[in-house]
Length: 163
Picture (spheres, rainbow, N blue to C red):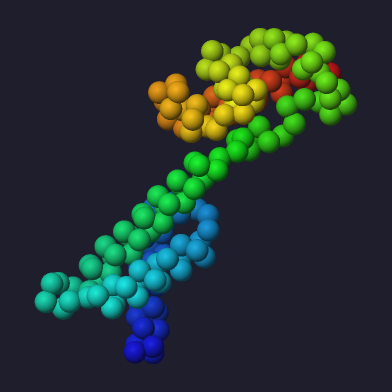
């Protein structure tokens, strides 16, 4: 049985990789490939010849397992979301560590939109999670992330102008 599965893996590897490409999987390729192999094993174990072709069944099982795994990963990242990558950079010049206290926050947020100001208030000052901000504002988490990215870019430009 083990050697027959190895033959099956060789035969269906292009299908697994094709599904990964169609689903635009761009990170954790090894983990997704393992999920695909497990799904292929499950499809091989559960397949009933009376119900149709194996390749169609295998495709559906593998794709379904990928989608389930993606949902779980996205839920994890949404729950444990930190600052956007741009915001993980220092918002304040390290040479003047108390710039917010000395000059007031207004100087740094004067060019921000209303939504960007909400992001600064709720994410930076109140330390709320992106998902929670999105629920409060009635928008998607992606919208809140875009507010943050734009706010960080504008604030960096403002800080560079002061230096």
